[in-house]
Length: 204
Image (cartoon, rainbow, N blue to C red; front, side, top):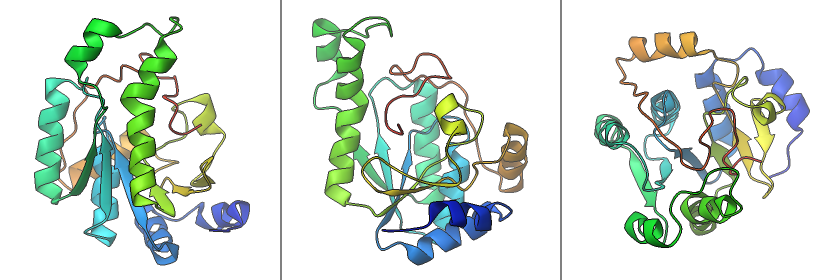
C-alpha cells in the first residue's frame, strides 16, 4: 500500500481515535490488530472492534505473562468477543528454562531469547495473515523510537501501522476506560524488555 504518510498524519493530527480507525478500515483490505494485553491495551481493542467487529486480533503470548495478565486477557476476550488468533513460541517455557532460562538484557543470549519468545511467533503470525494494515497501541512518550513516529507509520516490511491513541496520555485513557466501563491491569511483565523504556524488537 502506497501512501503519503506525512500528508496523512497532518490530516489526522486533530482527529479522534474512532475517526482515525474508520479512515484506516476504509483503505485496508486485510487489517489486523495486535495485542499483548499490557496496561491500556483494552482501549485499542475496544475502539477497533467498534468499527470492525470481527477484525483479527493477533496475540503473541510469550508464555511468561503474569497470572493477572492471563485472567485480564480472558476477561477482555469474552467481554469484547474478540476474534483471537493466538501465537506461542515453538518451545515451552519449561523446556527453555532448562536450556536457556531468561537471560538478562546484557547477556548475549538475550537476543536469541527475544527471537524465540516474541519475534518468531510474530513473524509467523504476519506471514500467515498477510495484513496490509496493522493497528497498534503505540503512544508518544513510551520510548525514544516511538517518539520518532506518528499516528501512521510504516513497518520495515511495508505494512501500514496505525496508532489511533498515539497522542493520548495515561489520564486520557483512564477517562476512556471509565467511559466504556473497561478493565485495566498493571501486573504485566515482558521478559524481552525488562525495562519499560526499551523496545522489544517488533516495531523497529
